[in-house]
Length: 394
Image (cartoon, rainbow, N blue to C red):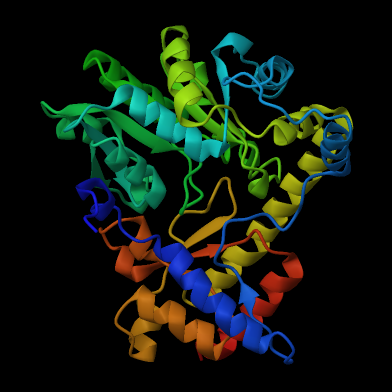
């Protein structure tokens, strides 16, 4: 069977390869006194709040399970619009909001709408691997630009200006970022957008962790820049609805009809049940619970990052959002006689029974010396992990 060149260009999702190995070993350890502690997957340990679960049950019982419009339920688009006003002080009209089958569908639609074969999209290295693969799937070329702790592992306007070439179509940023948990400073983001605008390009920003910002300085939406910015968001992270596969995008008015046409053909519509459930995300009781959980994620960060630093797994930049720690394991690898973060991750999996993610998924520049820890697990699990890591690294 001949496989398409497009498919051949898509690398394996190594995060999931490691997850499979950890899950297999985890099953063997499940009934021992040292079960696996999973700090490898970026999934909140919280589930959808009670009101959201009840809304889903009502939708099923009431027969509200048939197709919606391709752009989603109008009441849900309106509630998201209200949330932008209340949380960020932004006027984002519902007509510019498109509900999607997760942020993945939103990124796929944006790339299909805006990227032609050969177009280049500038992205930071490290960055979330699936984002660059959406560019590849649209027959574009993701151009990864090395970043450093000095720039919070984010692109700078100067980098974008210097890297812009004849085939460059725009930038795909993430703020806060996976794997680093760091955000772009609003002033630098504005400078980047000004460069992109001057070149006639597109500014596409993945904001799926924006609700989980811990620092008001960084917890601002790129939509504050102007109406040409395209923002991708999700119900998975802040709203704790990972498996419900529901997200949204905010696009310029001129792009709404284009996205709708593509969505009609590629997805028909997002999950109707998930949409009805998501309406309850914006009830005061649910929002209060989300804020309590955000505080819990911050408390986990505040415990875990100093613990990593103390044992030589240095986190160069304190995450200001999300639930990740991007840690330099080169010192530990040298001590243990290991060659890379890939070997380090499997060593910890087997000796310490702690599952983490090696850096190879997230780019090529120095990623062999970094690992990503997820702090989406409970504080008790994080404390157990620290105890085991301290022993393993002695």
